[in-house]
Image (cartoon, rainbow, N blue to C red):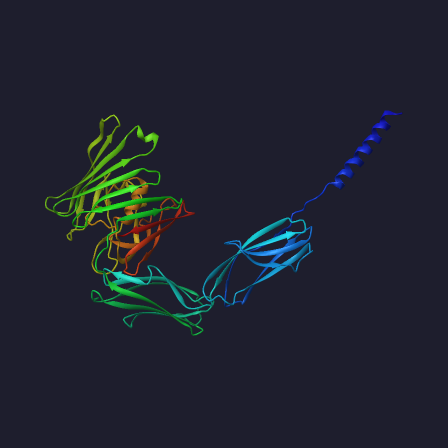
Length: 495
């Protein structure tokens, strides 16, 4: 027989066998479906029900579909109306009629086919209550003020209804009134207004009312309880929860005059930075010692570092003359290495006729300082915001300052502590936020018109207080490199 013919017949037989084998192979197609929007927000004004609709493809036919509570996987309902169907649109109505407050619902839709194969999709529905005039206030509804003025800040919202007016009353007397123009449609309004309280009596409570009206005639009133602060409650610690989900903790100690004398800054990795403060006869800090201890094998070779900042003042005054720095390293073998002895870090401090510091020389350049009178009381409040950890070499185009001061004492403010201290970059940010400021502030911005770029953080802050007006926490938000959103939370601990 011709060998070419034999080869051709064999090839045909092999092909037929392979084709038959492929026909006999079982197939296990998975069910699937498309849910276009997995996170939806709906306001009660618009509907009593929300319909979840999705295209399903179940080649082996539906057995049943389950609707589950995604928070605990409890079964809400089993749907059997689509049994046996393969390609179809699944619809499920969520009843919204019982919701009178803002509510978030989490669902899991699970389809199981006739071969017991299944797939699921998650779905989140945010239900917003019926539109009503309201305000989201910065700082809450309890206010203990230390000066008789207050910058009320918040976002007014009327939902799907148009805003008509915003009125602020203190002790029943109108302090501010805004009316939307007839041809203007507004649903949100940013309220930022300085309110004067006049004379406040210690121990008495006053009402500050924000009255909001929409064009449907609905009126919403938010009341803030105002009291005159009885003094600063000192925290014993501060927890810092950063954008990497890492905690660090600061512990504070005070002397018999309630002055800060010790800070223990413990990082989650076990490293610590200890700060010791001493005061002179004028009641201002003259020396800060920093001791840094490390818990890593790498740093054990070097033991721990110790440096001191010495603040020298003009004799008998609280006016700075120069700042000195001493760097000391303690090695494991007991030797002490003094790397720089009596380094003059900054000098040439100048004051105006009121005794306010106006400039100093750092790294052979004059640095001019800025102040604010945030409450119109004639007070000069230091408002520079140092991002550079070497305060004495900051460039003019990198200058920043604080904004949005609140008439509430920063609970960790250290009075008599010159705001000039060389630290690590993270430590510097913490000191600049919680130790250098007499008053709470809610924002920062560039001070120089020469600045361009995104390398400077310009954080904004929100805060919460308890019923006595004590600051519970600060939340810091900023963009890193101009686009990465980061948040750090500072929580104060009180005894």
